[in-house]
Image (cartoon, rainbow, N blue to C red; front, top):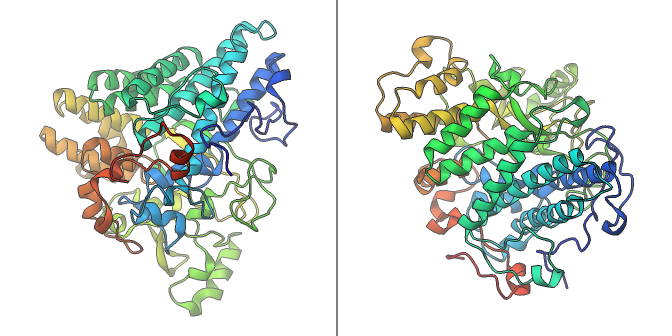
Length: 518
């Protein structure tokens, strides 16, 4: 019998802890019990490193994870073939039962489990570090701010995906946690905003090289802005966006392609990315049975990379394609389970300079069967082999904030002063001013321009479903989009704005109730 998945880990750091010499990129050192932990500054920091390792789990940011719940089943990406885990979102066959199924990558239940695992651990760290005389005051403040950011982010994802949910911010007995009912999402989000504001006030603006991969105060600020916007508090959203634009060290890169260059992963536009490293063992369980391989089990790029058995369109060209790839030091070594959707491909403007980074249907002169999204691909077979990538996982970047500021300003006052925020994004996306400049739009026309601009700019960056839901156009967009693999428009229902509570959770906790429709 499984233990209650709301409990997950019965002790705090039954998670892998790593040396602090290089953040999240070292061999596991040991497993430390909370009974003898937090006796020094280093212990407190190692505890946070362990919590970041949960975020890098398969079901959150490590593989498909949150991508599946935020991007699949909308109008940007789809798998190149039917696949159990992508089918539940891609074709809207979600149910309390399918939420529990773990097919190769992860399930709804896995994401629920690991987000609450984060909460259990951050609550414990906050309690054990606060007022701990063995830990310096500066480290206490820094660690608590970091923990509160991650706890707030976890609850933000939970309310986005499930709405009302179990909620606690203290160290509770396990039997009490196991019986928590659902708290109104607005109550949870009020606490989230408090956590994020504390984090923004106390986290650094930038980190030294050895700590890159931690979230700065600006990561907290961007989630705050998103929460205000979803609530329709446009002024608070705009104020927070302008703090980031005007006070953070981040700036837009002049070239869209440079943002995604794997050789420049800490560029000035990136507000936060989780760092991964090739050949780090022991961080995660294998992705599926038999997938025992050296590496950190980070294989999100493999989801976007083509697999050679599918390509090219003319099978007779496969050997010449292999030769061309080999000459570049490359392989089609992926799974192709995240490709550009038919709808996205057909509607992406042909004159948009971002198109080649989002739409790839030929390679080295060979026509391909499927249309890929190169900005998340890495075909280098030495530095980024299959299922063993060292590429960072981009979470937030400044272009998102500019578009958020444009949207807030338009909602408050119309487009007159909103152009200044959307134009820098469009200016690098088109060759001439006549193409990028927007003029004379009504408030509704500008609103619709934002719908499209966020689609093209932030494709497959785990924003699309969240955006469509808060705009109130989620169902209409899905029902009118074209797909090659699934037919989500035929199955999507009003209640799909939320995920189902996994059946196992309902069976084990009598105080949990299911989301309507499931």
